Length: 273
Image (cartoon, rainbow, N blue to C red; front, side):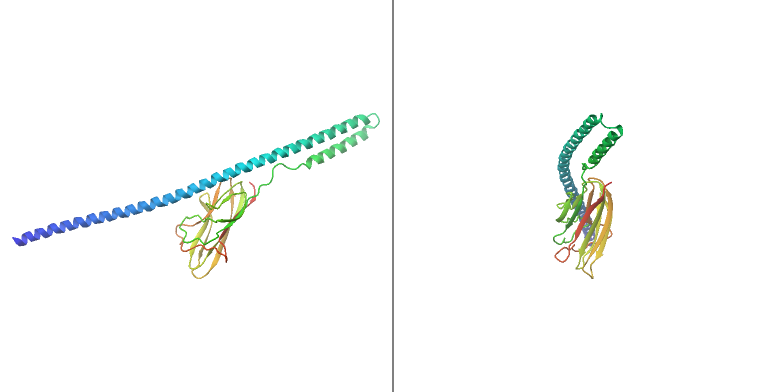
């Protein structure tokens, strides 16, 4: 009888142990799911932060464009006043020619009078052709580089080249690393990435969230640069930037930039659309 009760007691203990193990596994799975949700939310927050910075840069660019438009308007107004003055002077000159023609009409032949008028009219036409155009040519160019190395950049991280050497047109924003196109046209871009000490990275040129060029370097046995270039047809407000490529490519270590060599990014407009 005692053996039977002992056996029953063992069965009860075994059943309780199985229930505890099942509950423990359920808690572990729940913890894993919570961690995955946390990682997903954290990545989403990072993407939203990048999007917010891009929008802030776009707003800053629009303010600069408004200021440039006001300056161009002032320039066009001054050019219009100058052209009106030239037209008035030419009109007075033409009136003088017509008066002179009326005065010499009784004393000169029709042939001489016609030749003089044609010569004066030709001079007026030449003077009109010398009036300067009212639409100045717009130039855009930038050249930037990292002042210090970028330690362990993550996948899809924008490379913010912080030191601005040239920024004609004010399209590049070093606080976000994004070039916002100020005027439509055909643009050339070039970039150079320096790696050493076993760093491995793939960097890509992104235009409106689409890849337009990429480079890859494994510096396990060397210290060097990798460079590339691209040409793009762009409209006002398009976004252009460099970022660390995600996906199948390996990314490890730092992107270097120091007194021995810079990691840099540049672009310039070669023609209008």
